[in-house]
Image (cartoon, rainbow, N blue to C red):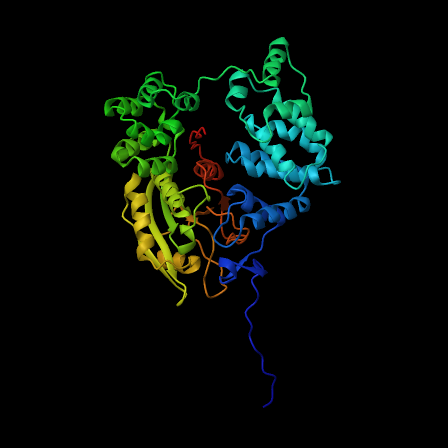
Length: 473
């Protein structure tokens, strides 16, 4: 009996990108994504010109420059607004607008004049945009750039201009002379005359008070009593207060009077490292700020990536790592979910086998510390997303949602996509890598970035009304 032999071949998964791999080229194939999706990834978790685990800062900027002209101008403009107003990023949206102004055709430049006033929220962003504009060499300002900067300039009052009138290479008065904004009234004209002549009154800010050579202890005590320190400024200055020998009862009074809604776990974590004697008060403040926030209903499985690349710093100027951010976001999610189960996962790069562990259901800094400790136990290799989810699925019933905090650098040996098993499944990407594991049809949403907005986004996607008040920088 004769016959033709037939070889059964596994069909190629169309969700995989055959041209790119994760984890610096050593992991599984990346998810196939559109230029818009790729741009969202690198923008919404971005600190420009900072190196990340598998890519350099300049390379990320080059990716942004390459992607912008591939995307409709209205979409790029919307992303710039989202990055600035919702994710609270400052430099990345300015770069988007600068790249829009660079495009000679396609309708990008026409949007710049109305876009700049929307994303410039502080006076120093006027000068930062010009620094970006001239980063590749001095050139004339486009008409729409002048229009947008002039409109943005008019919104700032005397206090704001004085606070941000700093001796940088490009100064606020330089911007004013270049774009020639029209004052709204005589008072604004007089203010701008003071700026032009460098005679703006010194603003009464905590920065000025502390740099004026006055007694620091007395200055801190006055600022606390007069409630001149915002919540973030209070936390960032805790170590300075201790060094200035400010009385504990004064500092404790400050904890009672600041608004806890203005801070987030990542801010508190940084403060506790510099002022460990007040760790208890910092944690209590954070929990108090989250106590009245409505909860995501039902059961949530939280998965924290503790792989080696999560040890990368979020910025060359920051002591915080991606692991710190993931732990802080787990802290946040733990408080904003009705019931949670928490896992940590990493693995062994040599064997390509995951290591996943159930964490104690702790609150606050206890949970963040448990995440850090798990990173030391679970191998330090890559994340193996498919294996991790299969491991948990054998132990857990399908929850209302699964939330994964990761940098999405999947190292699975087999190019099989993950199988999240929650009713809703979310991937919170805390990196600025261009590629990840957001395979189409598998995740309810991939959320790039690590602001407090991630929980609000999850709630909105499920038709719920959970809102976290935004942190004020």
